[in-house]
Length: 260
Image (cartoon, rainbow, N blue to C red; front, side, top):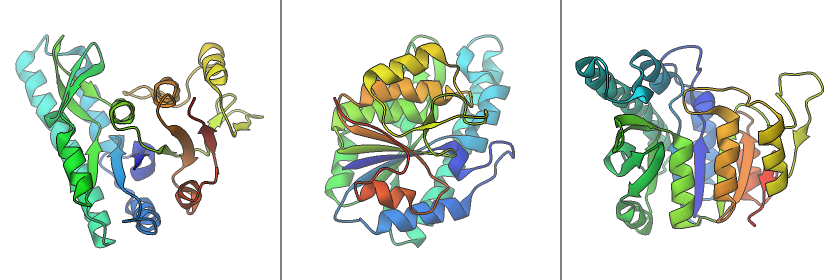
């Protein structure tokens, strides 16, 4: 089984609220279709330009405090926006003949202190047994410490990797992989393979590129440290046709972190 994280920057334009990159999702679906049903998949997509605007506006990360009535409305609005993005994504996969099946993340996870402390994964196991492709997403979630919080797609992927131990975890991003510094800077070099020590060095010495509501590249590297205990981890450009196919064939068109 393989887990694929569809980055919000791949399936939407973060600078254009509620934009959906249908073409990119179509290409991703077509590439997955080459390997299904021989290989089973779980997909997790980010919030992109759907979830982030509401999360920021209503300050969901602060929890259920202050204007509680407004926070409740914002909590629901953020979730509904993510359901719209999930629906658009599912629709593309169905059109490509893939049995994608929506699983609402907020309905199966509880969080506390920013981490998932409970996940009801039996439904995912059963869906995989039946040959379906579960599609989860970054979402709002009930938090035991502060009432409500944001549950990122990266958190979900890390938890699923720990519990389900896939053969590969693939992060689809809008850059070619992990660089030795901000990829927008002159002279930035792509790192084709990262070790545990290499990740720790990057986290200590460089600032995260593309910081957003759910943490940016720095957060992905921290999650990769966790995931690599259970699976190989790949960071690739999800906007480049053929990259996903290469990883599924065992090649590395971006950055790989081998399981240790």
